[in-house]
Image 1 (cartoon, helix red, strand yellow):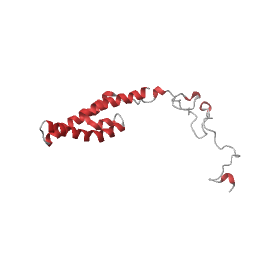
Image 2 (image 1 turned 30 degrees about the horizontal axis):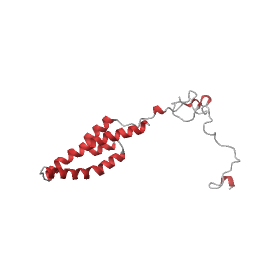
Image 3 (image 1 turned 90 degrees about the vertical axis):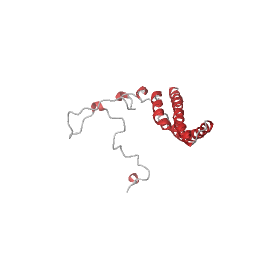
Image 4 (image 1 turned 135 degrees about the vertical axis):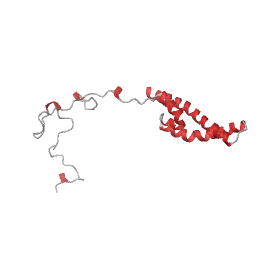
Length: 151
């Protein structure tokens, strides 16, 4: 076994290339191998590659938008409460699921005690307040996120 054939040793750079370097083939003059159809034509450029030349260009405006819709965020917060905040941002969703329920339970017990209610009153108050706090959180979260992407 010679030193150039050693798989993990130093590569032998004295041998000629066994393949064409990347990006050096011209698709307009490409001739298909003898076994393929002579009616073959090179594929049309879609404009997404990074090769330059006549391979197309990248336009940042064609990238998908990372902005979030305020209407969608509000609807999801209304329908799913704190779980709807996962649409805004994964961290907002996690924080809402962890932070809002304990805080709301504490506030619900305080409100129930102030109006002379019992545990059933806490359950009646808890869910609407929980959902009501999710909506402004979604609005603020979307506005902050979109402002970050606008700059």
